Image 1 (tube, helix red, strand yellow):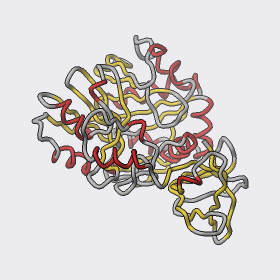
Image 2 (cartoon, one colour):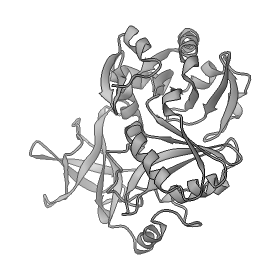
Image 3 (cartoon, helix red, strand yellow):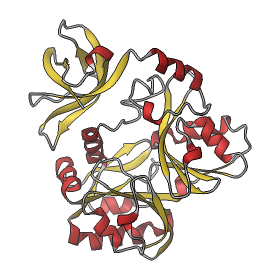
Image 4 (cartoon, one colour):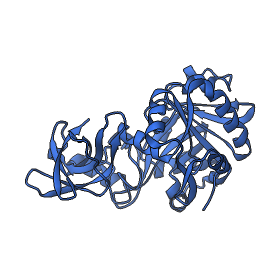
Length: 354
């Protein structure tokens, strides 16, 4: 297994370590619910250095990004970020990603850990524009500092006014005495905060400084377990669960990041699908009983016919009831619709929610 530059710190803190996407990663420290509530109410820090980072620059850089990305990178200016996905040629999603405009003609794509090699090979195969490509994944440490106290905590380490950094924008400079740190107003929790990127040799210093100063703000280290429950409460897609190589991005609700103002991989077919309308839609649902809809459970209609499967499901720490996501026929996708989750042979009613 691969390790991150901070794996030894997680072990020292007693984290429960697991294999995830080929990396040794912390799944939890004090417990998933405790960490989840800490992020919602105070501030938590996640080591997500297993994520992948690619630099695309030079002649043809914008053209390559435009071709492989669903979103319109031409609208990006230095300091701006877009959410996008990599469409494949058969109507599915290779991966979802963030696109950073580091400077004019220089982009950073941030991709999922499990897809680093697949994404790299795909983008490389599409590089008919002569763009320069660099995979900096193994050189980069990424921490997500999330929660209502995140800005106050991080402000101690930078001269940038973080209150001025708007959502999906970033600044780059000195942080905790370290140079070349990218501070990004993004995250995967819905609790607000930042993600900070830096070179591996700065990792131990930045982690130690965060943990020391964080005592004043209720900071706790958090694992991938809480990261998953937090993103599910917000309805954020997880690659491999809610979207994959076979799922339509339009059925997954990613039409807002699909820009037909330009040509990109499979754009003609996706545009036709948009015009014709989709048959299914990815929805969020809530269980009226304290039942947990696990991934893979069948979704049924009132007649007991199978109409889909749960793609993500858990007990919501905030609501203290089961929540989930799954694809259902369009006619059952409206808010307030009733669907049924088959839990060990018993049909449990669930309500489609926003």
